[in-house]
Image (cartoon, rainbow, N blue to C red; front, side, top):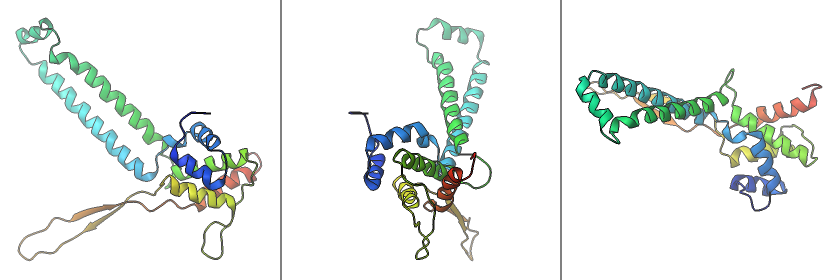
Length: 213
């Protein structure tokens, strides 16, 4: 992979575990970790899908409204060269294509329960790097600070930090009191907490420990 692009985050991770950055980049791309959203990203993608769907709905209503134009006026559309109405089909196709892409990205982060699929993918990616380097994939928790006690666990924790993997955003509702008039509640959305390393690390470890996993 000489002279090829290497993600700066992969360079940082390679530097942390002291290995060739091109190896990390190759395994990162092969694992498709980049296309799996974390819960925070998944919520934004859900908004994106909804926005595209809403735009398509309004565009279809726009098309329907144009059909009510008199035949003479619609005939003008066909006579004039490069009429603005010619852009409608390609605009609709573009919106639909973008919505499908967003839906696929949303699907990669979905599943049962509240699992952080991005964190799981990161741990699996780190495990694949360790396997290539012939390093042990082990799991343990430090009795001192509840942090990882093994090199693999520390690498997963570091990688989650490097890629800024987070849990779902936290939404809180704040109510204000007013004697003179009603006050609408204020919705505050805060960034999700950094993803925890334990469950993803343990899952990657157990997949290799159990027979036929």
